[in-house]
Length: 321
Image 1 (cartoon, one colour):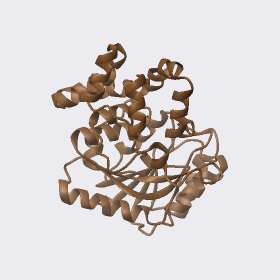
Image 2 (cartoon, one colour; image 1 turned 90 degrees about the horizontal axis):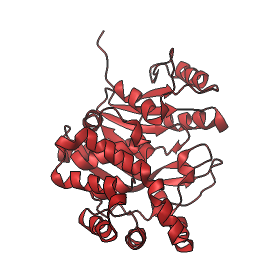
Image 3 (cartoon, one colour; image 1 turned 90 degrees about the vertical axis):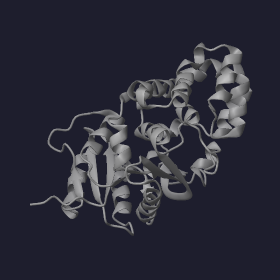
Image 4 (tube, one colour; image 1 turned 135 degrees about the vertical axis):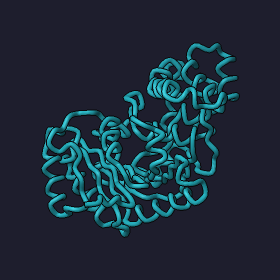
């Protein structure tokens, strides 16, 4: 019997999905999508709660729509490892990344697929492509934190982002993104240094393909005590910290940036021979930034366009770094 390849797969990595009923709430939004032409690829990262049982219950309701990866031999792979394992099984031309604790708006899938089709019509299906949107940040109880996640960090989709800026400051939020198979294949296995899968895909698409930032909100993005994004300060919070104690901020800056440095180093190790001299130099500048002298650091920021999503924060970086 010939295997039918779906037009779209939704890749959901889960850990601790029973908490707060988040997993079931998200599944409800998926199966309420206007576009139902997709298959859910889901993997539980050896949760200690009823996550796997919940997934089995939903699969019984939608037997041809949900595929549980590694159901009989779950092991804990971490965030990147979990997504990598799911994407190894992916065959659809397009894949949407999904966290278990968010809430998707009903037209999210429909609009994402249309955006990817426009990108592929322009750049071709063999080009690594990523399209992403803004999100509305909410807390664990769905109280609105702000009208726009991009607004919190001063990001404008109209502002061009260099590869250097992506190395320094990731802006793509995974659950808002749709990617194509060309990007999945180019990215390969996500290294543990990436910390989060969206950073690796953003760097790969920037270096070898194209990224489309759509100025629309496609989902409610939970920021609660159990997910890493809750600890991410907004642009205003960060600037207040800098002004309050610039010396302490400078001393701790590269400790906080070490994940991005490690990611840039891993990216160079994987793709160095394929990168242009310009892209290699930008990644090297991020990796070596701490070892540079005062004026060398400022020269590197300008030469390699190591800019933040907020112009004001970039200015603060130039003054204090």
